[in-house]
Length: 228
Figure 1 (cartoon, rainbow, N blue to C red):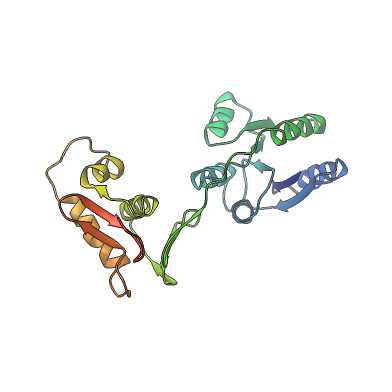
Figure 2: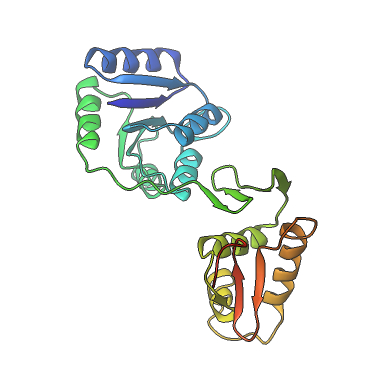
């Protein structure tokens, strides 16, 4: 199997990597959280082994980020944090297994082999594209025609929903429920205001518009060749 090992302790990472290599696994290493996330997001691995406590970016943040972007690679947490609450937090963050340090290598190997035998899950794309618009779900960046667009959190949510439903009409009610969690009409122009701001950032100054108003119904984000 191809395994990514994210661990900052030199002795531990060498011990695990050498042992796994002797059993026929191919191991890539990262010694801090940012490098680990970069590799986990950009490469295909069979299993990720991640220490909870890492410099730069902790293990929980790494797993939450890749899970939020749709990466379903099996994850095994390694940690000296042995409490029940610690294990529950790790598993709830998206890990598939949790092993407390110090550990027996034979148990680590058995757990990795068990994770590797699980059926592969469909990988969800981490970059959404419509025409010249690109949303990177891992880095949380938006570009149009190569230009970076700075969005507020609510604007990001709104644009992501429109992009995921590109070519389809989404109603004002759908947006209120999905983006603002309103299950009633608040009788405000919050949707219209945010759509207007989003258009200023996403469409203004570009050669064609992506966000369209469908009068009396709602909105649609579509490329010029897409038909509602």
